[in-house]
Image (cartoon, rainbow, N blue to C red; front, side, top):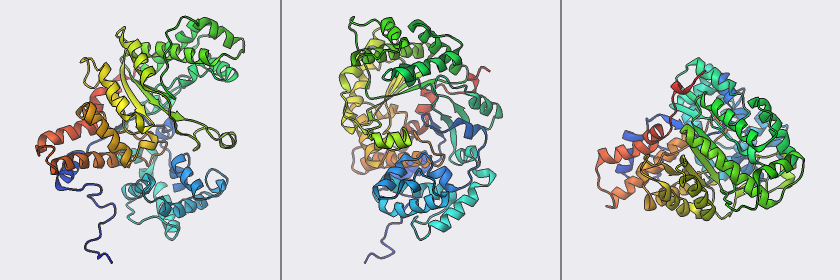
Length: 479
């Protein structure tokens, strides 16, 4: 039997920090830095309207497909996941699930969130679920647990939401005028502007884009004009980032297609071929990227998700409900060709590349070096472990690949990519993992113990590189 003296405490202050060097780097240099969360899916309205959550299920389980997948795997009925069961009953099913998530990042995330937001050190399970639900739900009804207050608890300085070109951004404007000390900026997500797989849906979207831009879209040039109009609109409301969710980047330099002809076929309600779809995506994305470059924006590409694989689940619950997985798409050649297409005319904006398949780590780590041109520190970035790679092993592998092939010192660090206001301890998780990797290198003699310099590098990765890389400032609002 292991004695209490030798048993390691779960989630102690030195969680994940295996030696004295790691502990110094984390506690003295990383721990207290503010957070710049430059990519997430938080609802802007809930921040601007200072939302108070009625109970823990609403803030913790609603919209969290990570938890939903775990509960389904355990055999829990959909009634208690996305169904009509009472919120408390849903929470209790999650409490029953947590002990079975051992070695999944959900286990760490769950207990970090309970500890950091609510001061709860207990391990959540079916026995204490009722008590923890009551305790956390009571706290959530207090004003200092509102949506922006929860951000403030985690020292969040900036959040960048993910917004469609047709969005009014009224909540960003409202929150900016509140002058709370937290900055919320939009990020331009125009995927629907080239999602031509379904002609009927695309035409409906063009109508929305016409209404938002005030430009009646009857030609491809007018589509680009409308998108440019919306980029201007976003820019005046502080936006300095775009984001795209793609299976892979596209490239087609052949002269076999004419973009205006494809657009006219779409307007007439005709279906277009797969080759025409790929060309349309390439051409439109290329033109958008030129606009980003002209504005001085950062462009982000999230690559490699195989989405909506379960047609029954999709039909019942819709997209983004837990039926997406890692894809095995070819990335390297079309990525190189697309980036080169922009770089050849010196119109390649600052770019962040994220992969979902870990086999592509070295591909991206080497690709970024092809297009770093000395104009900006870390102009092309290999983004942090994303989605299924947003866990200890995934983050370590991403950090090691970037370290081996590029310069980890120029890395812009972590983001949440989350829909939950309780997800910000993921920055702590990342910082602990990062400091431990550096600390282990010192302990093994692979790095010298130059505390001040290593501390500076850690702080740059956790905060200062992102602060410099993204031009995110309240002065950017022109309203």
